[in-house]
Amino acid sequence: MSETPPSPDRLIIRRPDDWHVHLRDGEMLRAVLGHTARQFGRAIVMPNLSPPVTTVARAISYRDRIIAALDPGAAFEPLMTCYLTNETDPDEIERGFKDKVFAACKLYPAHATTNSEHGVTDIRNIHSVLERMQRIGMPLLLHGEVTDSAIDIFDREAVFIERVFSRIAADFPALKTVFEHITTADAAAFVESSGPNVAATITPHHLRINRNAMFEGGIRPHFYCLPVAKRERHRLALRRAATSGSPKFFLGTDSAPHAIGRKEAACGCAGIFNAPFAIESYAATFDEEGALGRLEAFASEHGPNFYGLPQNTDRILLERGSCAAPERIKAGAEELVPFHAGETLPWRFAGKAGGSSEPA
Ligand code: NCD
Ligand code: ZN
Image (cartoon, rainbow, N blue to C red; front, side, top):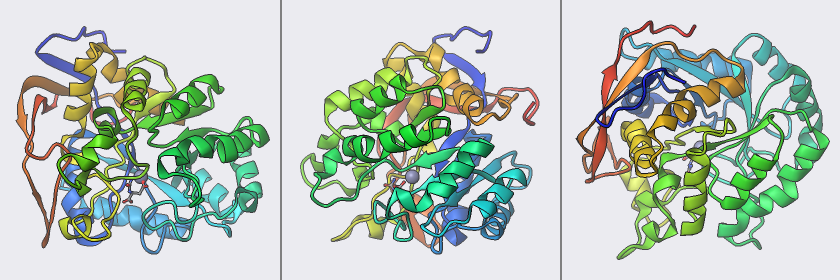
């Protein structure tokens, strides 16, 4: 924790990291990367490209493209993940982890979300992979939803705990596991009651919206993401978990940009593009909960501690003041609608606050 007590108008915190982000590729990557790199020291980069990042070679090449897309002088480290398939080779992931290419593996149940068609169809297919990950201490990142069409979409996370996560936890009790972008009180309680090797990320949007946001006055595609927002009681449980000070919960935006035409469509893509105002959004939430003093631990300390990585040593400054989010943001030839579009947030990111930019 920082020695500086939070003041009402200025907050200096250790530079945060984003433990779950979709940076995409090509022109979209070049358009969105700066929003993440401006605020965060590092980010866990999701591998759901097309084709997905399933090998060490693909991860190195993707990492190179990310680094090439950074503004000159930007201090930002992409942490790469391996997309698990039914065919993943345990030796390949171990090699990537030992060579510090892969920070973790991501499990997408097949057909759960964007570009997940190559995902795992049955957890039994990756038994030897999970065994190896447990042995070498490599984290498993879970998209925690079942894909059974008989299960109501709002229940898919809770049923995942019962059908899949509890089995993984029983079979691999020492496996480091992150329940990504949790959306329910059930998930928060499951993580809280699990051992220290089980943690969760929480997005800015699931702390601010409930499922009504998708239907307010008409269908609102920019509030549609997966896992889908749930009832108000779940949002309140997530706010309690995020601001509790528990080391099991940390920042992961799940920023997932899709060009406006792919959102505002008869079959719109899932994903909320929250990177431009992510830390401002979390700051507003923590402020509302009277927990600004716990923002730094959630945003900048619990994540690296869980991953076994050093905390960033540089600091950022947040100032109370109006931060107006535009309706649209240019992304090459496309446009994106950011989370908080048209709103004014009460905290603004005011840049670096001194200190070295290298991790300790
Ligand atoms: C993500 C995407 O678009 O890549 N979408 C989303 O709604 N979060 C995929 C994912 O994380 O589920
Ligand atoms: Zn995601």
